[in-house]
Length: 278
Length: 352
Image (cartoon, rainbow over all chains, first blue to last red):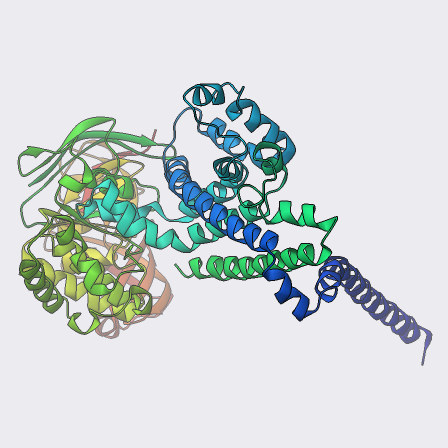
């Protein structure tokens, strides 16, 4: 072997060494990241036996929290879809002055710390709040009721839906609507017969994201709605409360939330992939 | 009758400036032009997607300039068809009539009629995503035609299809036009679509209509260098016209069809020139001696370059080529009738 061939050989060896190191390094990084996320979840799952899990389910604290959470999050999601769809549609399709301002305001709860949101809601809808005081005078309290739980959830989860819905509407080619109009269809039928079915998957994904956010809501709820079992104590609040006494109840609720989170993630991924077909 | 009266529309880089067209009842009208000529804006302005900045649009005497698209009764077939992907072919075709709240029995009848017309009866229960390009195009046509539009707009209907499908559909379009008698406005950048289909053609460039006429008229008598180039006139010379009906081009003086004085362009189609090794009798024709430069077979035709003081391009059929019995380097005579030499003023319809 002459020296030139030797040099080429060494160079090639170095290159393949570098490739191996790079692959190895990336692998280690990904593994560490996965361990970081998965370990706490597994720790929680291993901490409770199936028997204790089932036993805890009949604990009234657990059961009340589960029922309250699912009911309020479902109502919140419905409210969000009803309010958010027209807004997302208008912001996606029509140009008006202040559109970006409206968009930014809707996004605000995304970055606002939930505790701040809770306090702000209290200042607005509390007994002394700038709106709440008029309700209180006519005998209606909002703060520290189930309604407050729903208000808090809508407040924090709305942007998740509106953002996804607007993106879905924007992705839809406007020519479909033009085609519908040239065939004599008016605005609302065009929306319900053509547009809505074509963005359905995106809207469902957005609604599910909002539902998940509403289900996990903690800070704003405890500030604005309080922590009353059966009325305002949702699952995250119950987890926090029972952690100090009945750890099994706390873990049972956590496991339920983990399962719901997984289901949500899978549905969202599946739904968003389906929209691409069109 | 579709009348476009002095329409202006500006949309960023695309625009229409002072476009006026009269499209007759039952006419098949093709708007031809390169990309960016403003063809699509013109179509979309007629359809009512945009309202013009100035000017009027009249459909059978009714001013529709400010009528919303859905009330215009103008059908549109988009380049990408824009079939509703979540509806079956049947529901796509029925969509317009259902929007109009037509009687279900009537809808069924119309559906059957249009499905038969376009040979898509077997596709009615399929979804658009499962159809070929040609089939989608037929469905899009059926969806527009079932509304019995007063005018039908076709946006590059053949350009997205493969050669064979395109041929078939071109024949279909001619047949459908004959069967329904619908006024059709068809835009394209492909000159080949013109001859089989169009009653008349408008040539557009840069938002302007620069020539309107029957295909043969445009083909033989272009009014500008742009149109001449677009329709494949390869012999395009600048010269000086005299009032005696001749034009001096370089050192040649040729008799032409329409004498204009002053600086002119002369357009001669390559297939209208005759080549011969012996001097042909003049008989009123232009006859010039020259020399063959190159001979290039091009499919069924032979393209010959001849130098006669000015460079000529001549297209011969294979039979004509064999009769002329020529090879590169031969001395030849070229002959063409004055009517083959079309003259227009230099710089006509040039962009400033």
